[in-house]
Length: 118
Image (cartoon, rainbow, N blue to C red; front, side):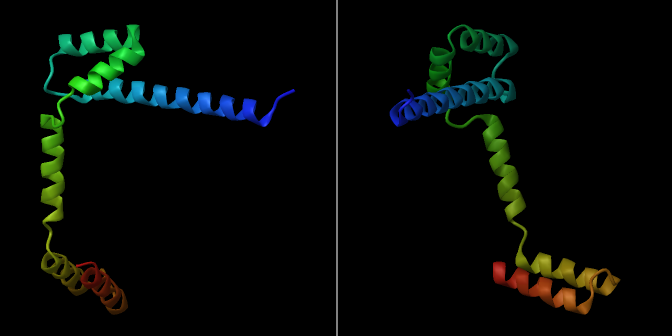
């Protein structure tokens, strides 16, 4: 007879396995995405993670630098994208209105939305 405790333990182990698999896949993909390590180093990490998954992922997470060149590039791109000013957006919206792409009503709605988000 299965009790509630047996069911709870089974579900707990299922989620622990799910998290372990998620961590393994994340580390595996991170090794391939990194551009600051060579192909031989990538192969070494992959073999280490395949032979001893728990230890391999743990060591990889501990030894991985907090910020890689890929992370720096992604952060710079995000900052560049966020530097679009409200004035630029309003000018583009006015250009769309003059070109006839946006109606007067749509223009006012979009303008209010842009001003509210600033």
